[in-house]
Image (tube, rainbow, N blue to C red; front, side):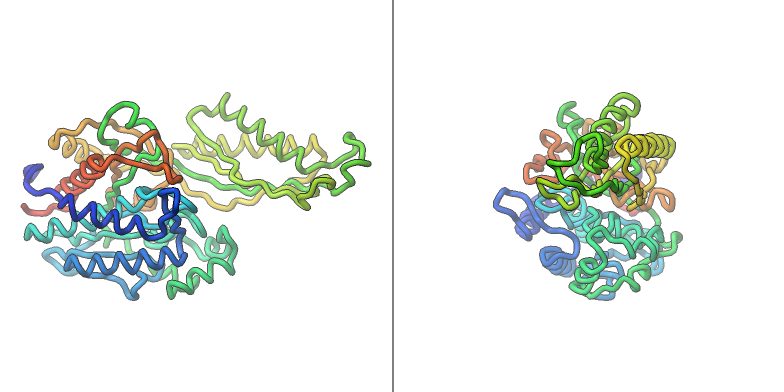
Length: 422
């Protein structure tokens, strides 16, 4: 390492003050945060973040107040060459509906604090350091929208099928002064990205239960989202004999139960979730004519994700045949697994050990913006413990000392990986 791990530290009080101020934007009575991407609360958070960037004396490097062409917001600390590539630190400020205070926000504010700390110390990086807030990581409209746009992984076809529909999507974009046609303009040439680091809460129980202070992420799961539509026939629920029904609800429900059994039996290192079922016409006395089921698959390898997909599609086909209903399958989203860079993980471990933190190397079961960068630049992730593993809910919580530890480790790793002379 080129520096002492204790040479500079983040400003803990400033970091906490910023965190508490941001937590009030979109705050809920239950103690969480409701700040979905492109919402009014998201717009308020963006205005606040820009104010903090400018108050820190950093460059707000965006074409518009709400961000770049995809809405990504950036604070930049220039290196010794203005045209040097950028080493990115960041995460996202958007939340799931009625989510928690730490998911995403911690990483963005830690990135801002790292840049401000380095600037105040008078250090000039070799590359440009950039703290970034990515648009819609959570997928209110399109998962990882901002990071995928920046890295060229978002397509015009993707933009035509947002989760809440085109009209709702365009309404949100209009709120931020963005357009569907313009989003792809956020793309950056890979040669201009020197690396990417992200600090995040674990969102699971492993670190909290083991007592370790830091997680060094080895890989991020791939996520495949499907819409299964079982199409049967509406009939009177009282007069149509059960054996003669073409009940779409039967197919959807038996598929769900058997899918769980299959994963528990044959895919123990994978995960699935049925996030929604929509019954048509959806009333007591009519046999369901159709059911649309939202299914998410997660696996840490391409092979595992493909095998899980094949098995569940085959199962859905079997259940539809058994219930004598038709089946339509639409691929809503497909995000491949990502392996963190082999040169970054040892640096994170070295910095953690030097700082005296206990750690473990571990995969991430959740998706993150880091996976958009994994195949184009040196990429790494740092986890801190989540109390009781709670996340995506108001119960989401991490002890503040763990937040500080994670931000300080992000600082030390950035100094090392971005080659900041100290």
